[in-house]
Length: 78
Image (tube, rainbow, N blue to C red; front, side, top):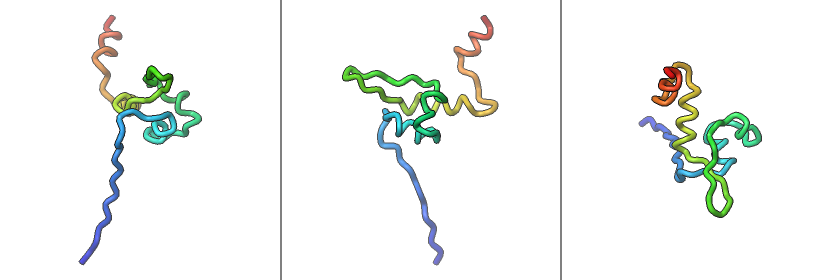
């Protein structure tokens, strides 16, 4: 009987520290804030975390032929 191996990676947190956000996006931590236009969310204690949903939207926007957001379309229309 043949066996197959399934490798799944589950992201357990919505908010990520800088190193984790960079790894999630596939970029080096040292270049993350230069390359990524997603702002961190500032918590009352001074910590800064990145929202996975915002990171997903940013990566999707980098794809060739990605659909523009409603705001981007309205901005171009004036």
